[in-house]
Structure formats: C-alpha cells, structure tokens
Image (cartoon, rainbow, N blue to C red; front, side, top):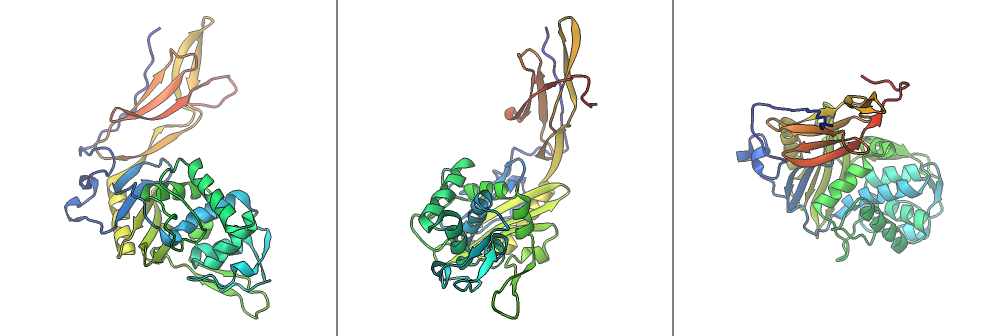
Length: 349
C-alpha cells in the first residue's frame, strides 16, 4: 500500500528562519536590542521560543518567583479555603500587604495579594498553608519545575528574596509562566488591574493595584509579574494576546523592563501569527481494512505560530499499525498525533 500524504503548506513573501534566534526575525531588527542580561519571547500554547538571549543562564529572578509560587499553590490548595495568618507570615521584609497575625483570608485573596502587590507576607502565608513550612513548600516548587522539564532552576523560598541557591533561567521562567497561564484562575488573577480583599477587624477593605504597568498601557496585555532586588535587578514577565496568539516575555536584570517588553511584544506580533495547521476532525487518510475503505481523522486541532516565509508540512503515515500525523517545520518534527478511525457516529468534515 502506498503511503498516504496530507500536506499543509504555508508560503509567504519573506524568507525568515525558524524562531527569533537571530535578531533578523524582528521587525526593524537592525534597531532592536535588549539591555536585559537574559530574555526570552515564547508563544504560550506551543511553547515555541520566538527570541532568546542567554536563555539558559542561571540568574536571580526576584519576585517573578511568585509565578511558580502561585502555580504550585493552585496545584495543591482550594481557592476558597480560609487561611488563618500565622505569626511567621507577619512582617516579612520587602513588599507586603501588611497581614496581621490571626486574621483570615482565602487562598484566592492571598494569591491576589501575591500577584498584584507582590506581598512577601502573602507568599509566606500561602507556603505555610500548603506545606507547613517554607522548606517543604520550596520542595514542591522544585517538583513543579521538574514536572514541566525545567532543569536550570532551583527554589528555596516562595517570594524571591536573595539567596545564592535561588535562581532560574529565562527559558525556564517562560515555560513555567506558560504552564501557569493554562490555568484560568491564574489568568484571571494576573490580568486584574485592581482588586479588593478582606481586611479583617478594619472598617475598610484592602485595595490592591497591580504593579504591572503594561496592563494599562499595552493593547492586549494580560499578565503577569514584576520583580526587583538589588541582586537580581529589575525583572519582568509579561504577556499579551492579539488575534488568538498569546505571547509571553521574560526579561531578567533589565532597567527599562516595561519599555523593552513592549518592543519585544510588538516584534513578536509583527513577525508571527497563529496558523491552524491541522483542523479538528479533518479527514486525513483512508485505507482498506477487511476489504472496506476505512477513514481516519484528526481528533484534535493543532495551531502553531508561524512567520512569513515558513513552510509547514503535515504528513500522514497510513502504513503504521495506528495511522498518525506528523507536522514538520523546516524539516524538524514539531508535533505528532495518532489518528482516529471514523466509526460512523463521529462528526467530521
């Protein structure tokens, strides 16, 4: 039996190489530079790196740590559970929402304090609630990082205060942010410009204003976290969504972190767009089985960020025991999907 092929080819006017690995893929690349010590631009759903600079360098990341704190909390705690603030979470140095011993807040409220105002007391309260002590929570954070394949990170606290053993890479932080953005609760929290949370025993609520300035100044901005210590410098993880494509940016030790993030986002949206390469329920092939034609289709859609000039090829192998579809970009395999046999009850086109 001849192998059946299904081709999807995307051809446009410009010839642009895979990713942003070179500055040439940016719009107006000749004038674009980042002062960040390390940086990554990544498309959220595919985790495709669109640009990188020193992406695997181990660096302190200050309060962008709290992205991993929030991701870990969301894996292990109920958002509506009530936390009684222990003395160990009161008076933590640095940014604070000024928690008081014995007051009660929900996990959701503490996450808002964590991500909008960068409360180190919120981080500590959440860590103690989830794991009992900071060291045990840091272990959970490291397990979270390993779950997503991160090899250049180590966490020893939930807030990002300086420690020689507390570090990440721009690539790891981008990957972990993309994972967190898969969670709708996380997305709702980090895209909030303001929030009101309880302030037990007081006549007024706590009003939280997000420190992420891009939420008010950049079209499509929807996250995620600022950070600063003298050791780490200014750090920022940003996110914006336009025309169905969500782009995540990481800059570590970058003075003009908001301005350069905006330029990175502009470059990404100028150069790339999301392309549906394989539609859901697309008939991809047919073969004879027991003398009858048997159709196979793609049970899931597959979309990918592509630049003008890039060619994507989707190949269907009908000779395998279970037919499968493989997508390649510039001769590199980027996606494989087993095909589903049409049963007669399925809806497809």
